[in-house]
Length: 433
Ligand SMILES: NC(=O)c1ccc[n+]([C@@H]2O[C@H](COP(=O)([O-])OP(=O)(O)OC[C@H]3O[C@@H](n4cnc5c(N)ncnc54)[C@H](O)[C@@H]3O)[C@@H](O)[C@H]2O)c1
Image (cartoon, rainbow, N blue to C red; front, side, top):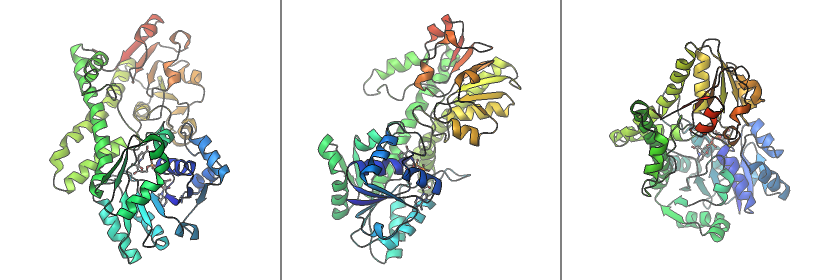
């Protein structure tokens, strides 16, 4: 099928490549020149395992084309996927939907009555209705607009797109439903992927609800960590014990410095804001607490660091990891980066390493000392903080690390306490009394 993918960030670039890999003819629309030109050259503008190779492959096959804005080519497309950002508004919890409206504005002249517009961005419930009215006004006919939320996880984005655990399609239009089923047919045929057809508001709410649930689970175990720290309990053991109950499950129960990234924080805040607008703010009042527990974990690490160093001013601190999660270079609302910046703010000399985010750090974080070589970050450090659980940090040999002071705050509870203590380190874990 001929399709357009509008907005080529983490979601859109992955979706465009995945669709091209399935054999569809894809036109990717991206106004950011640097991003688009990099993609057109076969160079992924961000780190995502496996996506770089797949991009080169689909370019070679001639299945993908990149454009700054729509042209005649878009008119022939049957489906138009909207993948633009919906960031948190500055000074408010609300999601900013302005990019969706501008994407719709650019798309409108290309549409015919048979075109299907498919939203994939995460949006406040009710957005699709506003977009439909806006689009109808621009086109002069009733547009076919469906919502198809995306559940990919950075780090495994391509695999998640090509083999999702479910496909949710919010539409009441049979033609739109058939077209979307057709585009995903290679996936559903191969993996028997369940397709859930819902009304549009449900499909909009699914993603915010899923992310709110996951965030709640993480903050739940981090709340237990706060209790453990003052009562002598061990949150790692606690999580193991409760996670064995299959109604609870083990995933998302590792305590640490909490969640971040471009989705979870803004999605829970967006849901709080939308529920308040709808007059049911109390329904998700608990999400404010989820957010606060999460942010308190970052302050806890800063507090531990200050306690260890007395006064951090002028002292060298090594922070291992900057991305919000391993296998990604996404620094948006990253707990590790936020801790590093907070300590730099207290005038510590913060040296930071990340296997994939070095360039972004050295370009955009002038108060931090980013280094490509981990030994330069560690050398003479008076304190080390593990902020992102990259596998190379988990594999570090504590006996071979050269620092000034062998003190490590394990922000992710991934280091082997026995091995580190045996090598002479003081290992400070979160959630252990
Ligand atoms: N990143 C993820 O893991 C992920 C997963 C699932 C869902 N989502 C959702 O997907 C959406 C996009 O997220 P992202 O992380 O890819 O954001 P992003 O900021 O990386 O990418 C958004 C892209 O849209 C482009 N854009 C803005 N206005 C445009 C327009 N009018 N026309 C065409 N392109 C335009 C921007 O230049 C940018 O490249 C968000 O709603 C997010 O919540 C993200």
